[in-house]
Image (cartoon, rainbow over all chains, first blue to last red; front, side, top):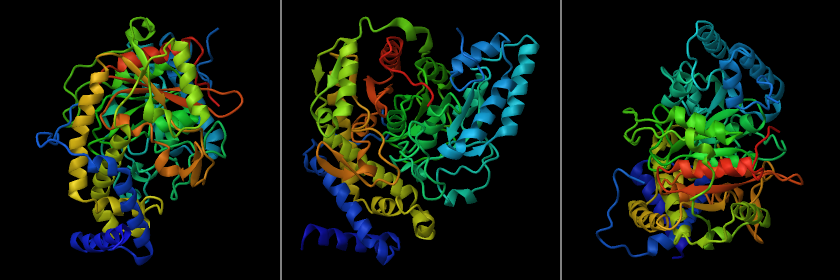
Length: 61
Length: 465
């Protein structure tokens, strides 16, 4: 499958799992927006981080 | 020669000075502001609610206080208005949404409104914004677009679009906005205003409609740096109603505003912040750097990745916040936000958590730069105000969507909560554009001092349109 097909399958499945009805007319735009996030965040999502780099529940700048 | 305190040119500081010495009454100032709104807001579409009776009562109280010899506060009689995601007692908090018009009236003002009024400022109403703040354009399918007073065929930028239009149009001297990824700094740049996005956690967000808890900030837009400092100082201080609000004591900025730039180490952000921008944006940064006498450059490493992480956190937290509304009333969302919120609600947890973890690394690396410099300059927006309705723009020869890309230079900075003053560069031959003056956390003072110096030297200014 192409990445777009994967994202489409993910959107369909995840929307059902969390109970979010998506109008068939809106589906392509939702998929496109998930793809945009994946593309824009790709650099950071691919970068390895040490295990000790924990999330910050209360963020102090 | 002093400015007429009832005119559009008057800053909040001008008004307060005149009111305090009884040169004008607060009531006269407020009537003049109401008249300007009535005359001009048909074009700007900045206000969604005008709280005229409330404002008249408040002004009368100030005038009575002065007549009785009392202290009316440092912002005595100064008109201001707020993005309509701030709770205004007795008004439904729209947050730019048709859905929110069904909410009951807010029972109490937002903390920042209470603090502004405690200092003598007078609230004149709620301001237009992009739906639920998921916006960089200032457009809104329910309430119409806010229009840029410098050219009403152009966008104000968003999401604090009405805040930009009301201040730049001379309707009120100070407006309050919110900034999650750039929503104060983008309209400041496109409308030619001073804007302050303080450090994350510096100003209380209590009783404002949220968007992205991890990234939401509130702050002022104004036509002078003195007004930014005056209002910022009035709003500072801990607030137990906002768990993110810092417990640090207030640090007044106004007393040191005119200290100049001596001793401040200033550099320009290179790499990411020099790419993907039009010459007009690069020239604005260069003109500010030249005036400040700096040729130094620093690189904020991984800024593109930081922007991506801010994007993912925004999508995920924003989409999740609105999940029930997306389930129940999808048809009532703005078509320009609905599918973005839906996509955000589906964000994989692995992406979201990675983005939050990356934030810590990016913060640590970026803060090291402040061992060597005090202030970093960067473009505010990649170009000047696009036309209303415009969907794509050409930046450095590449076509890209307007909505997602007006904030490419603001997003990496708010991602780690650094304080920024947006300074406007007016261009006689064209539209204004802003430059970000960025400082280390809780050092708003340094950014404000640089902005005030640029204003004093005539490099930066924000006259009403």
